Length: 300
Ligand code: CP
Image (tube, rainbow, N blue to C red; front, side, top):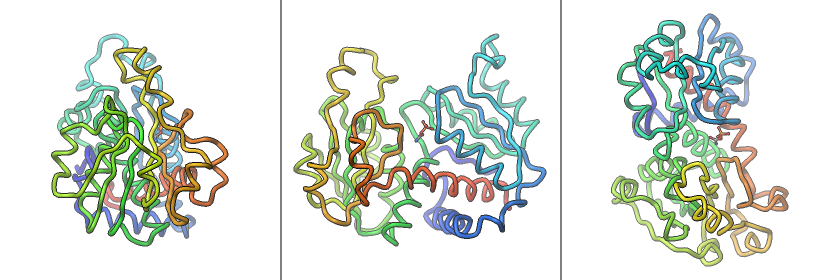
């Protein structure tokens, strides 16, 4: 079957059709309540999640399908020493489609290679998060009308943040895109991402106040505590950026603020009331785009 492990597993045209379907489902959800009748989705989550798992599960339920899975891997036979390969081989015989989150980078690619059913990477370590990217693209498209001609600031933990790795790669395929990577030096965008987007214009800065003034989109990220080897380094870097109303006053009237969530302190709650803050709307688009993705991968 088809898999989604990294954003460019789909062509730009395929992504466009998924986003279009996501919008159609959002505007007329009643039409889709039976399309996955008799189909089963497994959600295998080896790492904590609120949005990704629950939006996948609500997506499948809203399409008339059903779900099985685990969000506590210690309750699965993984804790008895079963390999990921054997887990995937087994579960793929029970279900029609699998979504898996795992703390190890690259494991999603490996799992998809042995999975006989459509396999979705729901986040692998500090590597990729392609369904978050579909969510981000739909949010941008719905609010701006187009994915071309955008200056996109990505701010925070660009080193360990898999959402920005996938989003940069995906956005680099559109026309007239410019990135501004805003991070402390310790958390700069990794070389493997820069290599993938080398034909797209980008700059790097440590200063959010300077960068914010002419952005179309500001994509904030959490400092990924769980990825740090040194807890002292996390403590030192965790509050390096905080988007508040004062900084928002420097930004354009039509800038969009996105964040994959969860947030810790990097966006002040007072910003939630600003009409430019789209991160909760973004979480809702995540459900509709996953409905569209499930339909696409099941050939429905
Ligand atoms: N955005 C995102 O992946 O959120 P969760 O970790 O809550 O799934």
